[in-house]
Length: 211
Ligand code: URA
Image (cartoon, rainbow, N blue to C red; front, side):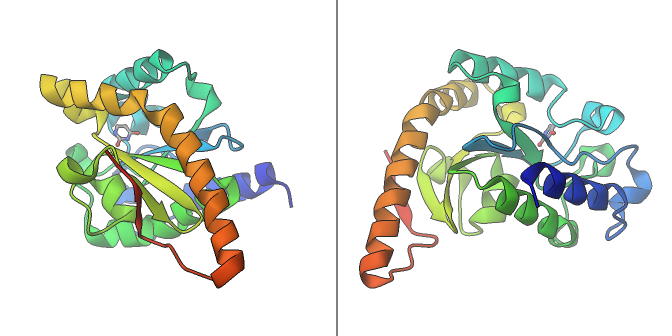
């Protein structure tokens, strides 16, 4: 089956999902959007007000900053795939609850399996700990971390960058390194495959490359 069809099937399942309480209060599901052949994907926490109204990820103030910062590194929004850990908005933008993350997990897992990215840029704490539960955002942002068949690259959430000037600086600096991190992740994946061929090592969860 082709990727487009598989993603469409996942999105249809998200649209009819009632596995947690959030579908009762949300206006629209927000499955994610963009280039499903992109080597880089961006994962946020959960839809906010504007995402809930439109059914599209990162279209509010945080989304505008994400888009502008992508532009600064030469990427257009439509070049990459953008999604969230949760597909329905938590009421009043409260933080995701553990059972909501668990209920929603199969969707993002499947989306990433179909897309097959090299680099997953996690935006904020919840997106990072989804992949790397032991992570601390202030400590691990700006590092490459091997997860399954890809690397994650945690950065601050754009909403946090909008609230604090020094976080904004670090957010922008981390973004500037995305092209370099993609190249590095590709190289590490190739050399990991070669290693695996030689001695079948499992590198999951191992820090690969940092500052
Ligand atoms: N914040 C997120 O984490 N995701 C969105 O889609 C919008 C804001």
